[in-house]
Image 1: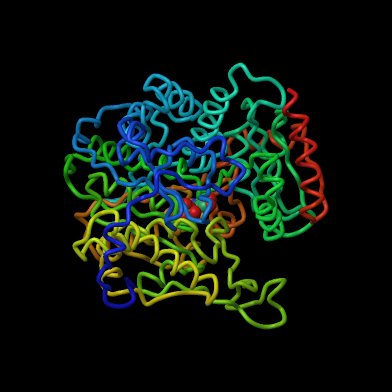
Image 2: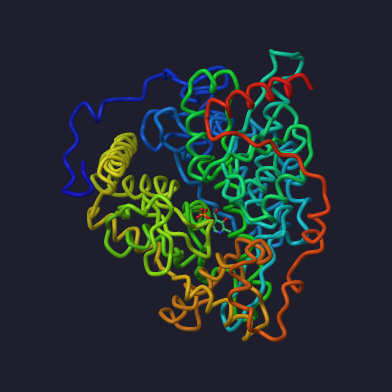
Length: 574
Ligand SMILES: Cc1ncc(COP(=O)(O)O)c(C=O)c1O
């Protein structure tokens, strides 16, 4: 079937073809792959606790497997075989953040893998590190517009909500695997990640001091802000290794990809992923949509449980907003999710046109950035904006939504569920192959686009509008937005313009404004009563005094591999 044309009728082979009992795995992780395809395992796992790959090569996998592997062997992303319906979600209204997380996560993780008391303990520890009692407080901005502050974790980014949990989860699985094992027999996970500044610190704060985990974060030397660099390099735990690569962020990413693609390195070091392709990150983020909804019901006298709300999400890799999609599918009354992009607008263009395609820039200057409308545009087409964490060419997690859209479309053919899943995976594999080979695909079949539009709306926000939003909110309610959050708030205001003021909007605030000084200063420099010290946490001010540890490395994946291997071996002895 092609979602770009009429559905083809299934053949006999499709109908009768059942899943094989086991799958060959092509990674160095065969020892940790748990397949749930056998009947006894299926009894302990509901379909929403069992995982498949969006490209159809893996299925019936345990939660532990998908968390430790990160990416499927066929290049796809992991999804639960079914989205669970939370039939009694209303009864969760008075739960604490960690208790709510327990209810939600239990639907996706079998007690056979993590007993209830252990999961509770992991969650309690993960959210006890937040500075706010509510973990993610909901703040009233103006009229029916609310801001969900997600930056009260250790690195002042929304990523802490998932990475604090993921760090504890890695440790839990590894400690269990390593019971009674010594030396080389122990499973030691080596997390390698590239950062342009933001993800690195959240990953480091999530993984610092964890047993049997080494973390290597590569940043481009001299190209992250001094503050972001200090946030990472002042963490001195023995298992944390900062590497300053003499190259660009893209070079760092290429090095990480080369390490993952090298079977010897992957096998020897058991590489782990902490970016938002890891399912556990999406899963943990579902929680704050429910939490915000209940907070709204407590705060607003006119809002009661069961009423609809819109959620607005500043979006790059489509991880955060995808978590909102899961919350909605589970039963939370989110009328629509508003995808807010900056000028890197591949997602906005998808919702407007049904085509998902990159826009490569051309010309001799592209390597160092081509000036287009005042912004630097790089070879692939990525523009440098004031909300840099959303400067992406393609959104990696969008593949997960595509799978659901294709699955829903396949389901309309009236075949069985197994057939629908296969069709969805085939379609996704085709789309992704076109994206790779031709730079895009689409327009997708009209039913697919309509389905996407029933759940989502999108808005594109320019740098000028971002600056204006920071100024306006400061003037109107004396609140300082970070630039990513400002993209969301601009989109929220536009959305309110369409729905009318009666529809409550929750806009997600993804970073503390002090992390993105340049944009905030640009917006508020002329304000007589504004000084940056007003928003600067005391903790940040002290960073420049602290000791740092960082290794400068040549821009060469072999050199990085050498250091990572040597250091990971040292860490294993600890
Ligand atoms: C501050 C900030 N806002 C928004 C986003 C976008 O989130 P996502 O990539 O999950 O769409 C990011 C991602 O890195 C971010 O760091």
